[in-house]
Each structure stands twice: as C-alpha cells, then as structure tokens.
Amino acid sequence: MFRTCDITGLKVDLNAEKLIKLNAVMAVVSLLIGVIGALLLVLTRWQVVHLLPVDWYYRVLTLHGLNALIFWIVFFEIAGLYFGSTIVLNSRMSSSKFGWLAFILMVLGFLLVNYTILTGKADVLMTSYAPLQAHPLYYLGVILFAVGALIGVFLFFANLLIARKERTYGDSLPLFTFGLVAAAIIATLTLATGAIIYIPTLLWSLGIIKSIDAGVYKLVWWGLGHSSQQINVTAMIAVWYLGAFLAVGGTSINEKVSRFAFVFYVIGINVASAHHLLVDPGPSPAWKVFNTSYIMYIAVLASMIHAFAVPSAVESAQRRRGFTKGLFDWLKNAPWGNPAFSAVLLSIIIFGFIGGVTGVVNGMEQTNIIVHNTLSIPGHFKGTVVGGTTLAFMGATYYLIPLVFRKRISFFGLAKLQPWVFGIGIAILAVSMYILGAFGVPRRHYDITFSGGPFTYTFNPATDFFWVLFAIGGIMAVIGALMWILIVVVSVFFGAPLRGPQDMQLQIASPPPPAKEEHGFEAPGTLTLTLLFMGVFLIFLLLNWGWLAAMWEVR
Image 1 (cartoon, helix red, strand yellow):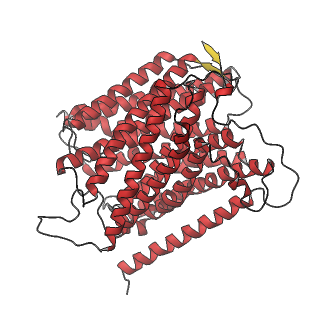
Image 2 (cartoon, one colour; image 1 turned 180 degrees about the horizontal axis):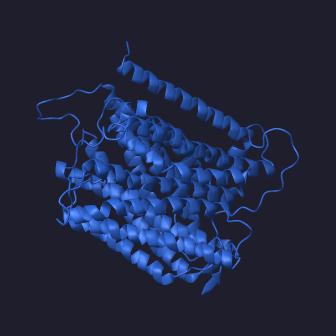
Image 3 (cartoon, helix red, strand yellow; image 1 turned 135 degrees about the vertical axis):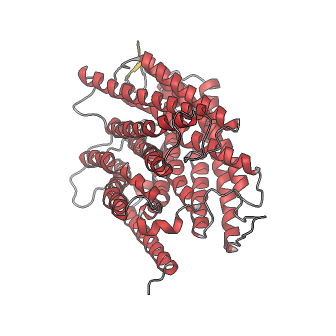
C-alpha cells in the first residue's frame, strides 16, 4: 500500500514508513540514555565534582558507549537505509515481515545489553576486552542486535534490486542512496567481523570454551569497533549530500568523483582500524605501517574529496541563484535559519577541523604514541561521531518529521538554535579533551590524581583551565541534545499534523538555474576554505612531530 507525498510527489510505501518511524523512535530513546550517561560522565571526569562512585563510573561509561555510539546511530541508520531504498527511489519494501524481524531482534538486543549493564553484570566498557568477562546475556544481546541490523542491511540491498527491476528511478542511483550502498557494504563486513568475535566470546562466557586469546580478541574486535564508526562516517556524508540538495538544490560539481570517493571508503576505511593496535607488541611493524599509512590514506583522500564536494555543491547552487559578490556572498546568504542546513555545515566544519585533522595524527604510527590511551582519543571521536555524525543525523530529522511523520516541527524557533548549541558545545568539549590528553590525562581512568595510591602525579596547572572548558562544552552539548530530543518527541507525539505544503516550515529548494559559461573556478570560496583547512592541518601535523621529537630526542 502506498500514499503519495503532496510535498515531494514521491510514492511512500506504508510498510516501509512504519518501520522507518519505529527505528527512528528507538534511535531517539537510545540517544536519550546516552545523553544522560554523558552528563554523569562529564560531572565525574571533572575532578572538581567527581560525582559517581568508581563502580558506577565504569558502568555508566559502558552504558554511554553502547547507547551513544552503537544503538542510537545504528537504529537511525537502519531507518535511513529503508528511507533511501524505498521513498527516495519511489519504490516499495521488499519484505515487511523481515523488516519486523530485524526490528524485534534489535530491540531485544538493546534491552538485554542495557539490562545487564544497569544490573552490574557487564562492567566491561564498550570494548569488553578479554579477559574481562560479562554475563552471557550481554554477549547474546550484542549478537541479537547485530543480526537484526544485518537483516536490515540485506533488506536494503533487496529493496535496491526491486527498485532497479521495476525501473522506479533514472539511469543511476541518486548520490545519497549510492552513499548508503557504500555504508551498507562496510556494515556487512563489519557485522560479520563482530559475529566472528562475539559468538566465541558468548561460548566462553557460558563455559563451553575455556579461554579467549586476548591479543586475537583485540585484533578482531577492532574490525567491528572502529569499522562500525566508518559506517557512520559514510552514512553521515550521504546525509551531507542530501542536506545540500534539499536546502539549496546543491549537487556535486563532479558526481563521478564523489562516487569514486565512496568506493575509496569501501576499499580503505575498514583497514584503517589497525591504528588501534599501534602500541601492541603482537602485530609486526610492517603490518602496522602498511595498514595505517598507504591503505588509510585512501580513506583520508576520500574524506577530503567529500569535504570539498559538499560545500562546493552549496556554493555552486548559491552562485547560480545570484549570490556572486566576492568569495563568500554565497555563504553569507545561505539558509542559516534552516536547522537542517546549519546542522550539515557545522557537521562538516567540526568533522574536518577537529575529527579529521586529529584522526590523521592518531592514525600514524609515529605520532600515535603521543596520544595513545589519553583523553585525546575520545576527544577525537567527539569530533567525528558526535560533532560529525550525530549532528548531521539531527539535521536530517528536521526533514523527516514533516515528510515521514507528517507533523509540523514544534518549537521551531528553538530548532533553529539547537544545532548551534549542540555543535559549539561538542566542539569545545572535543578540543578541551584533546588538549588535556596532550597533557597526559589518561583516557579511561576514574581518578586521574591517583589519590590514596602509592604513586601520585601532579598535572600541569594549565589543565585546570581546560577542565573548566571541558565541563562547559559537555554541559552545553548535553543541553543541545536534550533540546533536540524535546523538539522531536513533542513534534512526533503531540505536534500539529502537517496538512500540506502550506504547513512546511523548511524549504525544499527548487533546482538552481543552469550555470553560465565562465572561466575560472566554479567554487572559489570553497577552494579558499579548503586551503585554510590544509594550512591548519599542516600546522597541527608539524606541531605533533615537534612534540614527538621533544619527547624522544634522538642523538
């Protein structure tokens, strides 16, 4: 059964729509748990408050990691995969029964994992490194969730085959859906890796297998742990392209290059997870160097292509609409009052200038040693997964509320402000964490002062300033996330129905006029910003090599 959207004109499969809504609701529930955990952790890591006792600190750290990094994002991505393979392609769901099966398995996994964590049966952090052992229900929960997600990914591929067979779209997939294909391929490899490690770990927790090799566990687990974040990066970039298209009618200046960049992700991004093992004695130096340089740079190149392609798509569309004065007239006159647009632009900036720059330094064998196991590492992925992916997904929701849930956005004035509060907060948090890590603040330790222990350590007094920034940024980001949850919940469950295009609060841009025949760069403003980014990246890289030389003087 279908309905026809009176705003986009696309057919909407009602079965797909129902599954999109359910997965999106579970994503919001997961994020709420993750955000509550984040607030408790900020007020504990900041030693002035030090809120939680030690056992609850590690419990909440596990809870926060699973809900904020896995459940929230994967539920949202499954909703996105169904959206991109049915509504965007004007097509139908291949099997609603398997869609329900996937959803039920994921919810069961979500419940089991959260139950075991909150009852103190799985204080193992997100990595659950062996020989730390959780209750068998924890591993069973992770496996059920992963199997459900894998079914959802296979349904996405089946939906694509149906759409192609029934010719519901043009000659090639829209770039948004093409990006989702890349994310789904990475997801398949990632979830298969998870099964390889979690099934024997479950058997070990049941006593059927006597032991798990800690080195092998860590090697295989990171094929799941880091790669799952690469699914997020790929899906996030697909959302960037979608946001640029919906908000200003922007399309990639060279779509072939953008598609190649997604292919580069499939080739190189999973292998980059090897950088988590750079200080482990097991893998050989040659293995480490090959995977974290030559292969990883394929993925870095892809990210740089996308980081140029999306802003240049916006600039090109804006210039064709007449905003041609100087280098940045297009940016000044961009639709900043559209929270979906501002979320995408802030996501690009935070991901590039914080997550991307620090990621390259963390991923290199030589400079990794400066920050390994320090607070810089979670500071890095606050810049990627939170400031990048989560913010982009929040922005996309502002279009999903009217188009899928058929509701007006409640508190629209607050919605315009929300991406800025969340984005600025998470940027402050990420930068302060990275700097604290550079001062040697450890990553997971409950009490960085080692109070009561035989050894103590006094950090540079400058860290006091950055701890205050850490608290300000963390609380601000929590407020921004709660604003988003409030807007979404009230809009979806209590909001005014959307009666038609006249109730649409966000612009869906019409295609811009054709480009005029001109010589020179099509997007000079973006080129200037890219050069600025390269300058910042170069300075940061040189600083890290300088710090490395200062630490390990070679005579």
